[in-house]
Image (cartoon, rainbow, N blue to C red):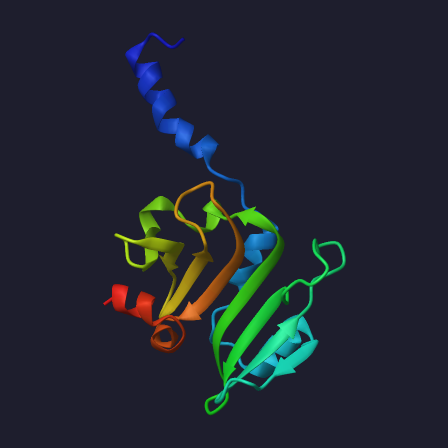
Length: 174
């Protein structure tokens, strides 16, 4: 037990540094995107998509499959999903799905993170952690409300796209 007040204060000041989660390369990888990439740059970064979906009017989604070592179930969603607005060829969002739920605390420092609930804070049925990045980029940890929660999905999205894809969140951010 530390009995000296100076040592006790020092220990309390340093403890958070050692208790922070080490960066996870699998989750950190989403930060290589800025949403300012062109589709051509995405292909240079990731190769051609394994599937292209045009079913959402005005948008195209590119799917990138899990590597065999990452896949945990027999019918997983794509590992990566890139959403592109067709008229401007602008990247709207980058979604990273995980076969196994991941702790993402290193991506969501407490001072830079807010928690949002759908349909409301008073009646939460779904939560997410949100971190504002540069420009209009937002990073979302879906299905998480607090440090230590694991997520199966990270979404890097333009704030302007929330009105279309997550209107409840757009309203909460006003």
